[in-house]
Amino acid sequence: MHLALLLLGAAGPGVGLARAQAVEGFAELRVTGMTGLDAELPLTGVERFRPSFAAPLADRLVLNATIEAGLSQGYRNTDAFAELIADRDLHPSLLLALGEDPAANNLLAVSTAGDYLSVDRLFIEFQRSRGDLRVGRQALNWGSGFVVNPSDPFPEVLLTQPWKPRSGMNAARLDLPLGEMNGLQLVAGADDAFLHPRLAGRVTVNALGTDWSAVGAWREEVGEGIVGLDFKGTLGVGFWFEGVLRLSPDRPPSEELVAGLDYSVPLLQQLILTLQYYRNGAGGGGSSPATALFAAPQAFSPAFSGTNYLIGSLSAGLTQDLAASALWMQNLDDGSAFAVPTLSLALTERIDLSAAGQLPLAPWSDGGEFKPAADDLVVALPTAAGGLARADLSGLVPTATFILWSRFNF
Image 1 (cartoon, rainbow, N blue to C red):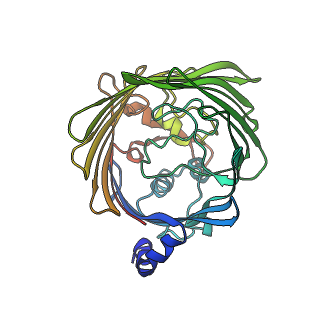
Image 2 (image 1 turned 120 degrees about the vertical axis):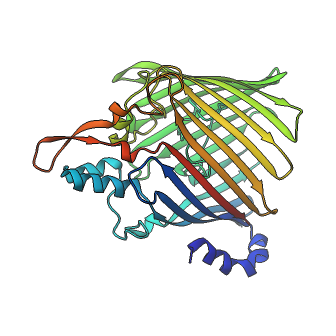
Image 3 (image 1 turned 90 degrees about the vertical axis):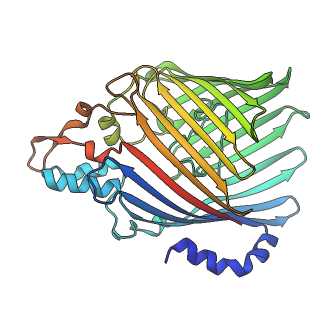
């Protein structure tokens, strides 16, 4: 039986007691299916249980924690790549390029307890009239942009994981109010191994109905700093600009920025139109998806490899319980695009059901960053014998992805 259902059954009779103890969170079931893969049944099932606790320790001193337990079954890209390695007699070390080892328990895709149980939040909050201090593992997110936040010192783009909460990081964060509308935030953090420091500061001033922020940060693990501005306001339409200069002693400075507008139309329950331009000055106009498949993720690097993008979104509240949205991300350099239609239904006050598609497209080109051309997916890889062999990776790259998930919120 699914882990989430077991936990829900165990927690059901005590939900009232849990809420009285400041416990909240969700249990989730998710199914993902992909097309265009060399697999008989490219389906993945995931069960998650994510409770959050808040426990007062003393006057204005609160301990906060979030625990996540989860299991997955079915298709995994790692397994498909392992089969390709075996079929083509490629070098076994290539599997490590995906960033994970084969699971010891192949059915449940786990090797250690950290694969199915984690403490994603654990911090103490000191609440004082002159400011708040949070120390421990917590979520941090700065910036006004849509999908992408260049001024966020600890960026994370969740475009392809709409169900995923922002990851926690080790940090001490101080929030100091400067009057009723202004404030200062200071952050000192570290990576998971506490080897590389991360420092950031943000000061915000409200003027002319607009929030104006200046941001600075330094990330030692990549030897990079950022300085920039972020502002957001409303003048008939909502508007924002968020831009930084990336500074490193090893590379020339490069800019990263977004500028956008949104407008709410009095139709249906609500209709919101969003349009944003994104520029990654360190990009190269797009890169081979095959190269990206084997490249290890780099901390704090821009989420996309191109230079110029246009992002559009339409979201509508069709009824009080039914909402729909459509997001389009267009690479203006290579012509490839990425569309994400989503439909969400509130079944009850506690249970939500959502469906989404992720559709890579190339409306006016042969392929690019989001939808690779066929030739881009044929690469030369090292063999176990020490030579090179041409391998077709098209069977590992989905032509479309469809996700169905349901949450029980408590």
